[in-house]
Image 1 (tube, rainbow, N blue to C red):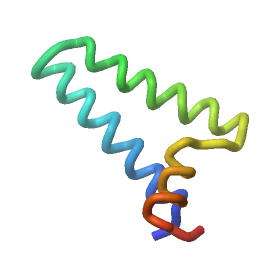
Image 2 (tube, one colour):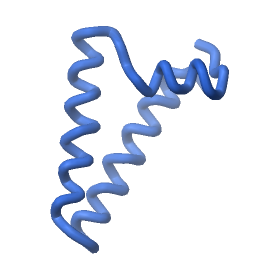
Image 3 (cartoon, helix red, strand yellow):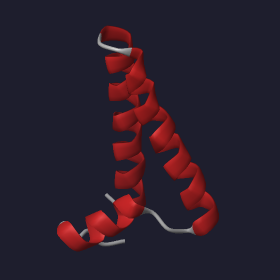
Image 4 (cartoon, rainbow, N blue to C red):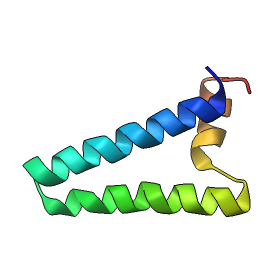
Length: 63
């Protein structure tokens, strides 16, 4: 699996988990959804993604 695919999967998981937590626990979990969305948006403009750096350094995931 390519790094870009892994990043998209992680973002999707974060969004789905935060939505479930917002429904079941507390609506403030929607801030996590907003945070992930804003990071996706900024990475589309800046071409920089923190999760990309983390995967590259910690897990040595290749492109």
